[in-house]
Each structure stands twice: as C-alpha cells, then as structure tokens.
Length: 162
Image 1: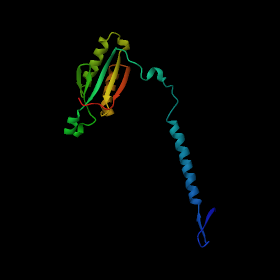
Image 2: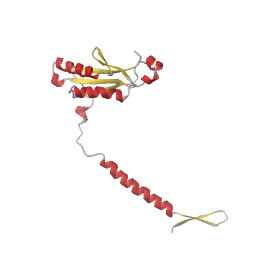
Image 3: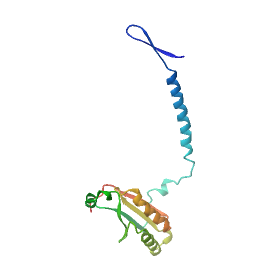
Image 4: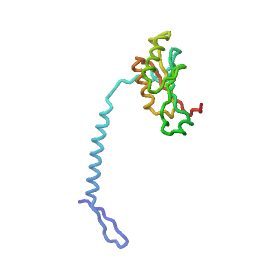
C-alpha cells in the first residue's frame, strides 16, 4: 500500500494511507468520462443556416411591427406584480390586449392580405428588456397560427419612460 511519509521537527515518521484518495480520484474520472459522452449525445449533427442570410438581414418595407409594450414604471411601482408582464401588443396603430390573441392573429392575417406582396410579408417583434419571454411566446404562437414565417425579433435596452 502506498504511504506518504512526512517528517516533523522531531524526525518522527508520520504516515497516511492514500488508497482512499486514489479510489475517489478514479471514481471521479470514470464519472466524468461517462457523463461527458452522454452530454455530447444530446447535440446531434445538424445542418444549420449560414449567418450571412439568416441573421441581421435587412427587412423590406413589406412588414408589420409588433411591439410588446410593458407596464410603465409608475404602474409597476403601484403594483409590483406587473413587473415583467406585457400590457398590450401594438400592431401598427391598433392595440391588442394580451388575452385577445385571436384578434392578433386576425390582424396579422389582414395585414398580410393587404400587403403589396403577401408571399414576402415579414413581421418584426420588438420587446422591452423588462418583458419576460413568456409574454412574447404568445406572439410567436400567433405568428404560427397566421402562417407567417419571415420574422425578426428585436430587443430594446435602456428604454426611456413614455
């Protein structure tokens, strides 16, 4: 059995058994080897789009902008439970309440039909940094129901009070 020897001031031998430490080290090595292989299996090979046409592409004028409007700072101070919630969704000049997603779908379908080129109609979703993702997700579901595929998501940082 391997033993380490340490000499003190009196030159007396002090020893301790390293077997348990070595066993623990090998257990950790085996654990990390097994979990590393399982983690890499979660990322199957995929053909991802090239960034030159899928990221930060300039959108044409044939678009609609959906603004996810948060509650104002005054409303949040009065009722802190509104922090992170969207007050309304604004599409062009109309405001759609959060709970009225059917109206949002109808409005998006109407804008697509009235656009000059319905096949290339696009949507930009804009949100304030204070709005949680679960408030934006219904907008994405509305886009799916309206069968709109061309979209861009924008986030506003450091928003000034209205």
